[in-house]
Length: 344
Image (cartoon, rainbow, N blue to C red; front, side, top):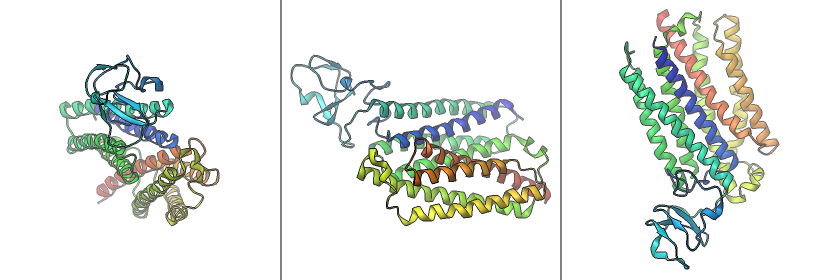
């Protein structure tokens, strides 16, 4: 077992989950357009801290690519320049990818931290690529999984740009989140293939439990997809009422919201059955306890969002709990599948 590779895989998995957390905080605070361009932020690698840095002013130096707010619109400096007494449109190109031209220092730095989380994760993936390529005693399939996951990260980075350029189009954000789950799945699979000791901890195979794991995972994926539909509805309502009136977003929810809420009951029942079978047949899948805990947080935050109108932090916990449940269930399925093959 390559301990260094496993540690790097662990860090990579955590880094992707941190991106989920940072992204959910961005959504929770309405900071998605805090940086109107990508990959820079208002044309800077380190974003501004005050609006004065972005407003056109006479006798002020700007570097090529810097973005300013002028007459409630964004303009990009076409070259390094020092402004004169009057605004010269020949030195500036109108930013046409969207019309959002607002600076909020809290939103800008929240989105910037989200991007930094992605950058840090990118460096982790580079280290992971090095380890998986040059490590000795390679395990079949691990390198391919890591390479595909890295390509997925590159695609996610590009999709992040599309999210900003499209002014936070909801369905693109949905694809962005699903892509993150796929990357987590690939990394978990690679980790499982390397860490063969997972089967030496006394796990036992049970056919019905095995099937219920698949049912639970499929239901969880379906519930996440339903949740993205509800989130898209909330996003559209936020655009209609404004982020400051987000509490109005679920005053008249769609059918998808009610289905998503009611389907949670079925998800809970199935996972309680997993818990019961695990106890009854002494299968020693301790991860079932994590599933129930995460399910509690997800359901509780869902209740709070509806009845208490989106208290601070509930969206982040709700999304992260679902993503963690997906990972834990997938890991349990990997173990159960291996036990099933050994049994055969």
